[in-house]
Image (cartoon, rainbow, N blue to C red; front, side, top):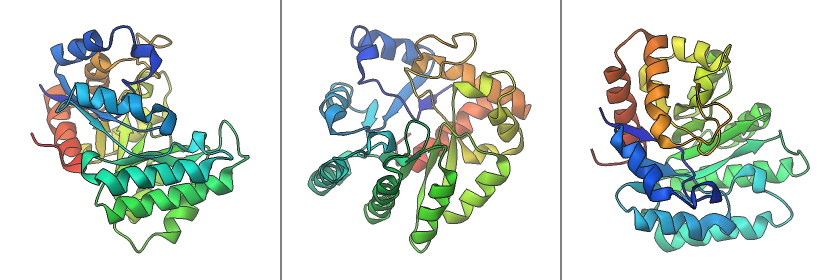
Amino acid sequence: MQLIDTHIHWYVDAFSDDLPAAIARAQAVGVGRFILPAVDRSTHASLMRVADAFAGVCFPCAGLHPAEVNAGWREELAFVEQQLAAAAGAFVAIGETGIDGYWSRAFIEAQKIVFEQQLRWSSHYNLPVIVHARDGFEEIFEVLEKVKSIPLRGVFHAYSGSFELFERLARYGDFKIGVGGVVTFKKALLAQVVERLELRHIVLETDAPWLAPVPFRGKRNESAHIPLIAEKVAALKRCPVEEVAAVTTANAERLFHLTA
């Protein structure tokens, strides 16, 4: 059974002491490839070091996280542009980008500008976009309307909306939802969405070191927990876990242009 973690921050301090061991634990349970979303330029060097050290296993992205959009957002965005112009082929996606109104709305207008630009780069470079949407779907749709004439594909990571909201999002491009540990939480809305959504719209993720699934909730998350997420999806879909693994892995391979 082969699985892919489509959203993992291996390069943050939480994994500084045991990264090789954590990757080995994931590989031992069938999680063999990892998508590394970008946050900002302060973490870019660490991200690329991990991607280089585990080439063919860890795949880097370029982007600016909405929660990191602040007074220096123009310089941050210029840095992303420089990385893409120099070596767009080195990255498998743009992001993570999007809108985050949870931590602060002080730079929400700048977040919309940054999100729109990264969507345009996604289309220009033919790369999928990893979208972070937290307390910001109204702004997400506002930006999507502005770029609705360009082809888009990507994933709404850590999806927190309803089934009907995803149907609306899907009108703007070939989008998947990222299903992580939240699907195992009691009374999680995500579980209801997964029950109704076809597997072809789903990829698996951890967002590690955050959002660990039950029974590890509250502890450090890691990619070795992906099988727990796959098992929960299988239970919700009333299908074998092997089918969940096969379909979600194929979805991720197509989305990020990974070889089997």
